[in-house]
Image (cartoon, rainbow, N blue to C red; front, side):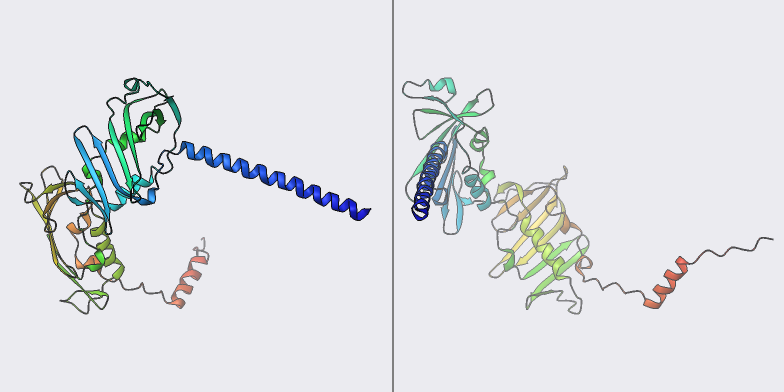
Length: 333
């Protein structure tokens, strides 16, 4: 009898456990369906290889190759891979806040979607795409109206999409001062008001060719290279267009693995810094502070500093004892 009772109890537990598991799976399935319904970007973002941002008569087209992202319209140039990747990845967590209107006969003008602010298109290698029309209008909660893939739905989405629709070519363009891998730099020649600084990499170590016995702090040289690699322009001017009346600040010549590269850097009367670079043939208006470290840099700034001498132990102990002893006072008369 005891065995029979235990068997029934086990069967009941298995039965209840099965129901609980079934309910859990059903709830999970419903949750996944709901999440799928509110997803804004429905294509696989990892497969996106084409982005288009259209506003008025302006159309920005970005295409990905094996080497990274490229601008193909309205100009042909390298794109900033990080900027394009962030543009795409930041759309992934976006959700449809609500559907303002759905069905036939929608008055698109009421929501500003008859003449949208702009259109953003994402295409994938699999041949799928999402096309978002972004309105100029917002609801009372400051969220923006949008239409996806010509659906008969007025979606309410985050107002950040208006910012995305207002992106310019410069927001996606490669604005690096040096468009080469910094690891390929083998020689540096910096000429500024302090004089000429020449560095060369030999067997993985940076040296001063004219003073081979001079020890350089390799970390400080790497910081110099990082400064060059991180410098960005706030404006790019094509060809030989040059700002006039520049005060010369420095020239920078680099020898890379397979070529030479030169930059002439000067300051305008309004204190803006401009750089004329040899490859590509651009004049760059630099971001504030981007190249300040190079203006007065000398070899002294890169020298290895000798370690601080440790104070003689016996002198240190005598000094501590003296500090700890009571102050001698003169006998009172």
